Length: 343
Ligand code: PHE
Image (cartoon, rainbow, N blue to C red):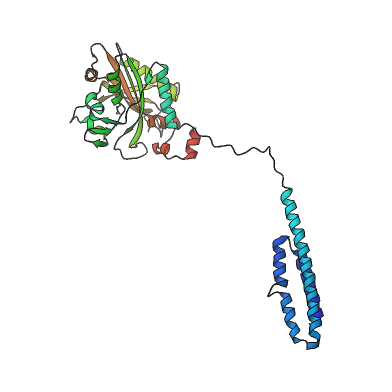
């Protein structure tokens, strides 16, 4: 191919490429392909060497002219492409009325909510809410509660001891003693609080958990009051049909003692295949009973004049029942999706 034909071919291909390019990036590619160091123009320039020397200057001139034209065309196309891009970005509309993403709202933790609702119920019935230390000496945890050293019941409260005489409280009952030491009867308190036991963690157990303790001492207090108050609480928390049943049990600090169940809120007491109560129709909430005369004596209350009842319920247990959750650990995993569901 002679030089003129080669340049004509180059021009035609260049114009094609230019027409088919879209945007600044593909124009760059065209520039490299034709005018770059190993581009098509370079190949044509090399062919000058094969011409007789007299023809070379004119040939060089033609090629330079062709290159200039290409550069001009490329620059114009580039300017046009940039103008289009800027125009497109300017014509993007912003809808200032479009609703924004709402800020994330926190909520009360289900455990706190249950504690709050239990306390609110008792407050409405004239009880005071009191809280106490989580580290207690033996005396408040055991001795004053009619559990002397060597008493087998101590084992039941698998405790974390900090010193031989100091432990993380395994129940909220120490506050029975502290309250009665500070006040003469009548006494009516409810005690929400965290407790600790050396339990292996599973779907129903944690080594750190919460209890709500209740204590009422006055003249003529009897177990019927206890059952009435607990039934009312369960109806408020779980539904108006709830029943409460007492199963005989043993605690050193109450006599008689009971374990307290409420109607399973899932099967409504029907039992059968219910996965919440395992078919019994009942859910255990905790322990209760009439305050043992020895406990009253330990705080200088006269058991011939005064009587009282107490209960201690597991708050996690109540939350499982209330929110139909199958694993206690879910409450403490800080899983946003889970907590939002219960909010
Ligand atoms: N403190 C007992 C426990 O944690 C529960 C309880 C409290 C029982 C008050 C009777 C009276 O197991």
